[in-house]
Image (cartoon, rainbow over all chains, first blue to last red; front, side):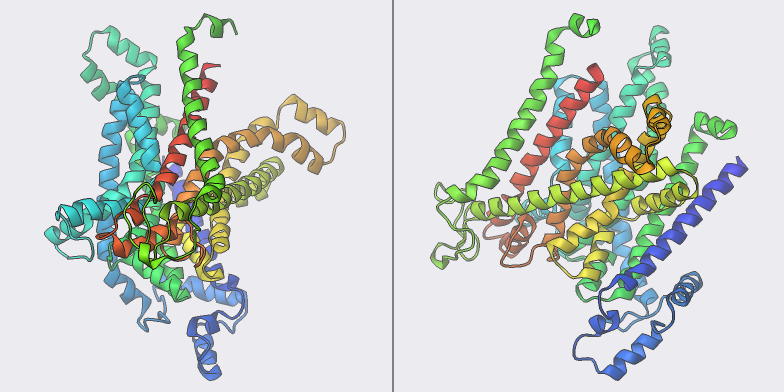
Length: 315
Length: 278
């Protein structure tokens, strides 16, 4: 078990390293001179040279990579070229709305996805199952930003229930401003959670131990709660890390739709204005969150499912 | 076979109906995108200020935008761009991923281990973030967005192909090609890849729709198709300031994308259930 823990940790560290190298390569992949592109055509050659030296771009590539990795580890992320602030400060001022939005969206996706997925599995082959699955396919093909626009049109403008733009801190403020974007964010993921859970529920409901539980005369409710659901949940946990990746990407678009000053809109601004250091840090952060979520999901699976544990032990 | 015949007929038939309905929807959408702009009385890019912001009517089925252009005609032209780009991106990711996945699984050893870690990481990094980073590198445009999507997209197909090849490697017919003295390149391209491409292809059908949704999102942000060319995302974005006065510009064009998604989903469902039956 400890060996597994160490191996799994090592895997995550390796992934983080690959991620850092990929992020480092962003700047190297820019065709032409990245400093000139960032500072614009009118920047004086002397200034361009100063910034180049500040960023260490006059060093050999491997030295640059080493410097980049040490800077990440020591938390010295450098300055944003466009905003002129330390990137750490910039990120800290933007992280709150994004973190709340992602959590809110994740909760909505899991709750609605599970309810619909379980319903579809229990009524497999009926009209309810069909409608849920067609609905899932339809919402999967709806672009999240479009759903956001429709929601702000109907619930925001016409019914006046929620503001359609901006962010207010605090519990009530966050609920008012983030509910519509969170629904839009969660919608396509509901389809993903629903499909996975329905699939694994159906598999479990066909097994012999569920049959045995039925033969003992347990009520259907007890069989679902005590036997089927417990076994169907573990495969769903492992996709949540993947779902989180989608959510993080989705915030970039939805924060733009709803004018929320979070990390997503910061990323879009940084891309628009070619602020490479900011793009790099946000990409690093987003990737790291997903890698760590994958780690937590795997450990959680081992903790919850004795079969996974024994597979590891005899592995 | 015996089992198939003794099975009640209605059951197997229902699935084929399902994929037929899906196929019809997809065919209608593609046909509309190809033929629609030719049949439409309205040119997609010609402005007519006198006819601006007209609500949907028999003349303009999806209304007109702020400068009087027919939204339906523009959406169908936009759907052409989205379709071609979505298929191209998915095909490229499928081809690159399948070849890389097959090679590393066939070769094994440190190459397999190293590439597998890269695949794991590529799948872990949020998709849209990579696409945005690519746009930062290459500048805005449909091509940059497409490149960004292939840069991450191949990884899933590499993982699928790798798993297939690992199972296939020990099969007799592959062993036979080896004892015939074929080169590794020939074995891979002529015998391994054709056998592992099918699972990837299954995944790719739904992936085309996902790719079109991402393309639309990037165009919405202004990083995709550049004016005067408009795809579905940029049409929706252009309508956002008029959401209150002219709801149709931002809402109706997405119907094309949703119809396509439902169609492909139905085909997919029908086929996977047929496979399970047979």
